Image (tube, rainbow, N blue to C red; front, side, top):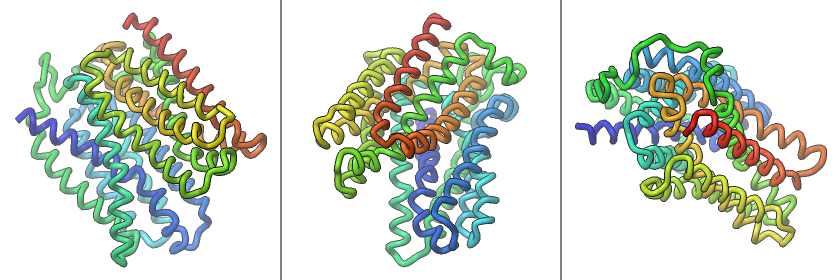
Length: 386
């Protein structure tokens, strides 16, 4: 039965990834049908991001009250309803309205699942679970493209994924008894007690450091995802097809790297895995900085993806060690919020800088984020004695 619960959690991580890449994949079709500017996708994205940040910050309160299993079930259901709303929307205003529950559903489930796995499963499962998230982000656009290739509208792509989320919701509800009494007398993996306020969380030793660490990591990942292809075309004289292919390989590098990282955690600690990942990212950025044509830059981009692989799951998994099981849900909720803020703010910041001084600054920007991330992680370990 425990194996069944783990299978449900794996499916839940795939479910988390399914809609994450859907908006970007669908938007070239959506904005033409709705007759709105292409840039308006940023409005929908911002609404989703704000909702995700809000629900992440409330995850401690919700999880203590309802339990991790129930929060997961209700959050997936909320996301499923929002995706169905997208599938019946034929105006930009409706997309904005349905983006609200979309974001609110995503944040709580992300924080609740990550904390539950950090408390109850080995580090290798955290890496493999986030690998499953990568599978979901890859599968979402494939499902959409299959619908479009079959002569259906973009709405049907959203509807198919909505139905998948609804089916998963039923499975999670059926599995709720398995989430309870996992260890230490905790109900549903959640310690008793009052939820921490944001002020109390930030006052914990190491909280500011882990927030900045997560902000920088997700800012780096989001910046690469948005600007790598443009950098290769404009600065490294790469054709657009090759640039797009290697930009995709960046995400494949993260997904495959997390599959390998799961085995590496059998030998290395979470702290060591983070340091290894940061070292590989540094090597990738060095290749991007080399004035030696496009080949080193292409290899460097994939190398950065591989380096990113172990950092997110390893930092999450180490949170109970740094802050204690009684505080980990609250801290992970704040980490998730910091992650989404970093993903939202850093890519546009590089775009603003690049428009003034040029996209040659792309690898320098990544290097600055990496250095700050590494410093914050080392300070975190020092302040929490882990």
